[in-house]
Image (tube, rainbow, N blue to C red; front, side, top):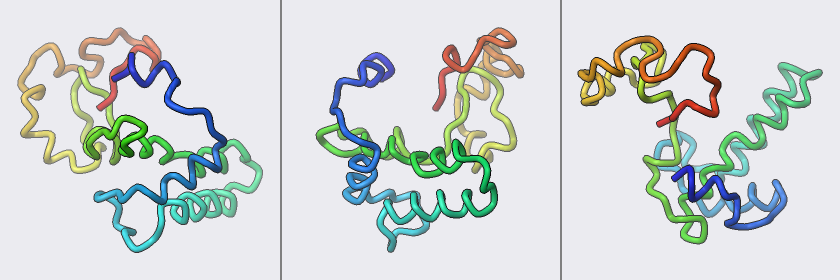
Length: 135
């Protein structure tokens, strides 16, 4: 998936065009199913702007935090929701109890792999996020 989507060759568009495309996405994990996705982005950005008025980079981050959901659309790969939406966490190392719905990770076979059950797992300390695989 990294090799395919890392090319960034699917489409050229503005951030706003991408935001508008999210209205075609129904995120089954989202509790606000009644609201369009773009509404969620705007509400998030406004809430962050209100709480952190001097952090413009954070306002932008809140606005774009769900843009990857377009990968569920057919013209962006049509990936299944489990591969795109929801919370992410590093794989290849011990699962942290702060992961959302940590109890479900207890059923993951990686939990019983000794190579993955330390804080760093398959990674070296300070290896950088570019080298960490995420769920």
